[in-house]
Length: 444
Image (cartoon, rainbow, N blue to C red; front, side, top):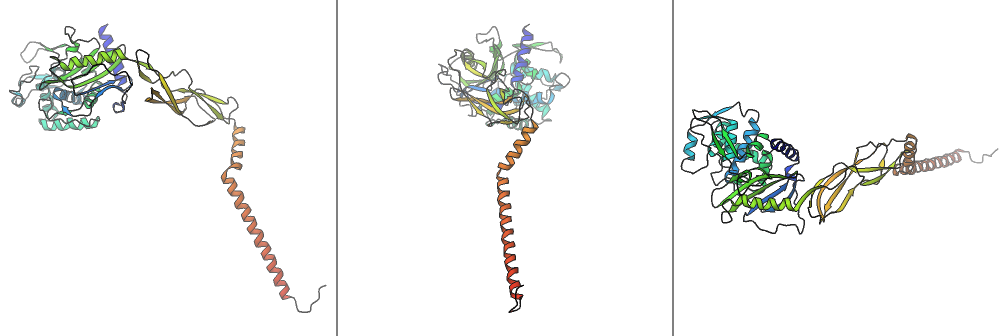
């Protein structure tokens, strides 16, 4: 039952991730800020159901990424080989262990010369933050060149909209790896579209299959928020990626409770706060978010919002307009705020024929003066055009149009000119006739 529930949650989150990530607006509702402060100098909390940012703190400031770097390595792995995780095996090259020697780096005990599937390498990075696993993947995908793979990482970061991220290695040991809280959100959001990552990042333990003349052994997640035996455990936490290099910790994670989902990123939470400060402060932020907000429909697609006159029709004078989407939005759970404004962008009337479902305008919804989104308004019924009314109207419109008035003026001017020319010609002819008559001739 629990497995089925997790799969359902994955499906719901995947649907939410179809919303463009870059469009996330801040949700600044006065009186609903947390009553605590966090040590993390940068943070970013986004509701995935509405794409609204509920908490932001210096989210555009670049900071050392540490092992959050591995999220990009996993993203590139899955983007290129998601359907070959169990069919491609990779041998760990010896030179990468020279890079890692003496750095006290976390590993999954993948040894020099061993062969592992891409799935095993993925789980090594996601569960136990395996630095050698990241280098093995980088060597394989970079054609033996770590620099080639790092270039791929930086290209992908730009492609998904990161603006303050630079990678210098595939695992995060180098302090030149930089990211922002918002960029880490974008990378994690992209990763969550892959089921293999969602599954790997959501397990507290995972068993490396027997092989390479070794017995099977277990990996243990660095994300204690999914470990039910930990004091940091939260039932709503679905997974995440930790990172640390100094006296601070990073954590990028996602959480679901009562059908509501968030991504939360905290960067450089201080070890002065707790032994695992990033987990502790993430729990603070997520407890606050779930307690404070609920997701509600701002609009009802079964109820009309407006009505427009319809021209050239006899069966109906007006058409009812319905919202095309219910526009899920965040509202305070205590009911202390409500929709305060609906701004319509509509024509004065519609010409028949009108087809049910035609988009005829938009409505913008605001909460306490804060704009939260715009939805199309569609016609609620089909209305045919009366051809007689349409023809008469078009004729009337023609005779009252500027074009017709100009045509009449030009016609009258032409006739006036013609009459003037004709009169002038007659006068000239008469004058010529008088000149040609002999002197003294009598008229008969």
